Length: 183
Image (cartoon, rainbow, N blue to C red):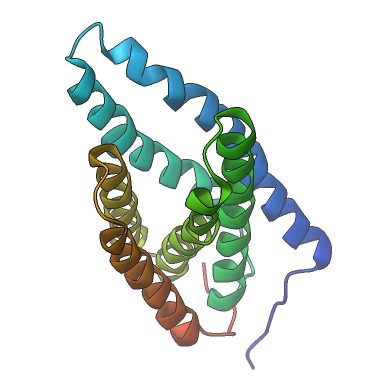
């Protein structure tokens, strides 16, 4: 007989909150890290290293970290919790960029859903017990978008990456099972 698990409101709020909490040190760390790296690299290379290489690697791991300690979850519930962590992260990052750095809100708005999609992709990998390939996909998408931002590339390229990440997240959600994962 299979068992099913649906996250409670308290669990969902916890994972949304963990995304919020994790985003604060990330924002505080990566913004000044590019300046620090200019001690070792030219400014452009330091920005690429900080924004397009280090930030995606660390952020995607930090967002997924709380999901490794869940037991008795279904693939679908773990996916949902990943989505909530990413959503909390994206919302906090949105407000940090808009209110503290003066970035226009419409520029940062897609990032909310993007972080949610990427963390849910990693969560699906965790649910399958094959987290590395899904983590690397999320890092690739994140690095690609950040690299385009540093290079100030046309918006259509961002849209293609965002649409691909959102489509992949939707596909994985539709494939996720309601049956509890055996650990």
